[in-house]
Image 1 (cartoon, rainbow, N blue to C red):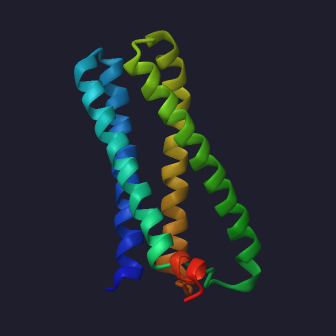
Image 2 (tube, rainbow, N blue to C red):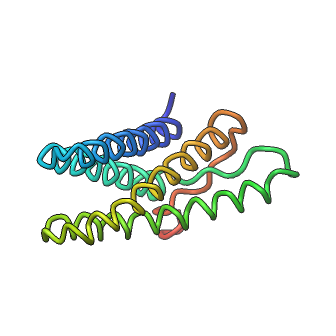
Length: 154
């Protein structure tokens, strides 16, 4: 296994870990175990940040992956991918907002945002795993040039 496959596998694992931690954290909040809730949700945020660092590093240093599946599925894959990207962006903004509200002890707003954020995060994690399975397991494609090479004309 080379870096081309290790980066996506590790980054996808961090998103799954983050989603599982969010689920546990939500359960702890419902049980009113708020100190444990806070710790688990911080761990979930750290896992999400690690995902982003690995994903961004792969894009810059290794490159992205092109669709390797049947041409007839390419449009559907791209629509699904764009949906996932938009949802992930929204989830990140909502996640930062929800964490900020919690740290500022604005608990009423934190609870309202948290419910929505968690659901969006779960959907993002699920669609992210589906993208991973499509690109690296079912229909392995090629990869594009690393961004750093494209920027410097290498």
